[in-house]
Every structure is written in C-alpha cells, then in structure tokens.
Image (cartoon, rainbow, N blue to C red; front, side, top):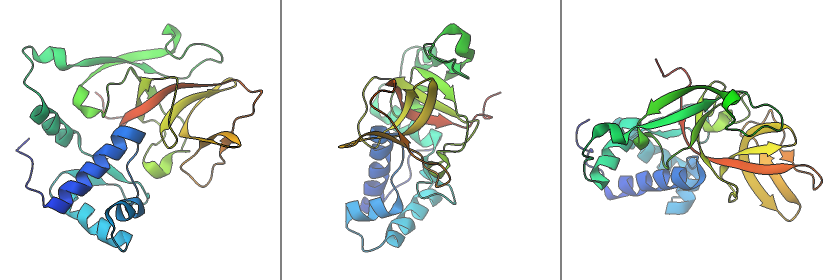
Length: 222
C-alpha cells in the first residue's frame, strides 16, 4: 500500500475517533455519535467527512446500517507499520487462530471438538490480538455489519464494559451481543430491530467468554 493519504485536521480527528471506538467497544460509532462528540450541528456533517475519508481509501462505508463504517485492512496494516519497527522474521507477525463453529452446551468454547480448522492471519487486521475466530450464526447483529457466516475475532475475557460487543454464554447457549449492565441487571442487546434483547435472570447461568476485536467476512479465505 502507498503512504497514508494526507488528511485534514478534521478528517484525522474523525478517523481517530472511529478507530478508537472500534478498539474500545468492537464497533464503530454512528454518524450521530460522531456529530455529538465533535460538536457538529447534524449527522450530515459527519457523513460528509466520512465520505471524504472513504474516497481517500482510509475506510469503507457499508450502506443500510447506522454503524456501517469499517477500517480497511490495508489501512490498518499501514498504521501498524508506522507504529513499530519491522520484525526480523516476517513469519513471526502471523497469528494462527482456531475457528470455532457450533459450541456444544456446557462445553468450553475452545474445546477441541469445536475447532473446525485453523487460519493464519495478519495481526494488523485487528484492534487487539484475538485468541480465536468464532463463526457468526444468525442476523441479530446485522446493523453493525456482523452477518451470518462472518468470522468474529474474539479476545478471551471474563469481564466487559457497557457497550462492548461480547461473546456470552447464557444457560446452554453462546451468543454475540452488545453488553449492558444496569440497575435491573444484565441485558444482551441485538443490533437488529427484528430481535429482542436477552434479559439475564439472576438464577440463570451467565458468563462472558470474550470481547469482539475484529471481523472477517466468512468467505474471504481460500
């Protein structure tokens, strides 16, 4: 990839905001959130800057979703190269990750019988280093661009902050949702109006399995 395109101060500010949101919550901000954060009068101003960033090849815009903003993998690679010295052996920069398919009830998510295969990927694809890839099932997170068949990069974790995209175990099911803990307890929120939030009952087994740190289209591998 060529050197990073020259950005205006405002474009750099918005790009950094998008990247930081993805790194901290696993999902990009909405146009309204960008506008609120930077003091714009409307989301349209944020959209204009995002379109300019897309034209410069810094990110991709996915139509039809409020959070349809993605950093391009080659952009992340360039940023990563700019932040570090080159590694002496290129192969050391590769990650080998297990791909987890359907998880059996009650079994550890990384149990060998759940591993469909392994993939070798570039670490720079992800905001933080993942421990495994999880094959997404269903469309409950469609509006932030997580679709059926995608590979969600997951970092193992037992705790989560409000707003983060998590892999959680509720009873005998493993699900991908946005985490919310409030006075009434824990809710797991979908990003698709066709689905209802999952309210975790006090007497129900619940645990955080990991945090989303990136996404790969499921059919992007050979």
